[in-house]
Length: 244
Image (cartoon, rainbow, N blue to C red):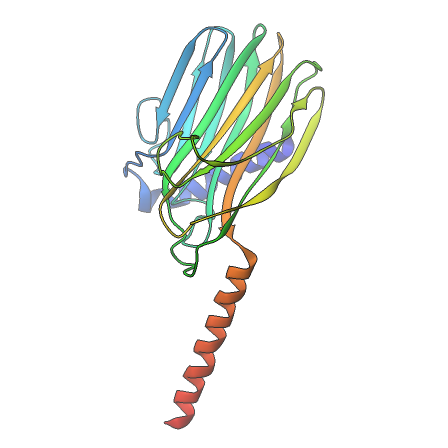
């Protein structure tokens, strides 16, 4: 839990420092959706839209209250914040506190579009990966599983035809953590969407917390070729200097 608190403070600090540059800029493709399956209630929060307590682009801070649960703090981060660049795509969902008043089922989804690792060039191969960790409360019937999707359709929450990986199905009690196995995706140097969907069951009077991050990075051979290219440019520049 201390790690989750530290992560939330870190995320907020980084985002606050970026506020001068990004505040007030809408990010329409970045959306958080909380489905209370038990009561048939769905809450959707778009970046800088209704329900988003933050005015920073790429930073959703939402509080969603349902008849059976209060999601006290749900923080999503995406581009242009965090480690995002033209060679790294990253989207993180930090649910600091999900509290159940009675048994319930939730589906919490986060999506964003228009990722593009156009800085890698070449054939555009990348690796889809994820990591997740948190605490699962005291009841062994509590459960959590997260599915992660890469889709060249570049559409919000689109899982049809997507490449996907999945976490283990975690149960209470206690803490858990996992680096989800990576898989090859292509192309990543053209617009694509990322989506993560958490399926959660909580028994009555439980509290769980988790932090889930999905990334797309260049496949190692692509990085190797990029390195060779940089070396080649350096050698060529040195030769030009010597010839002068």
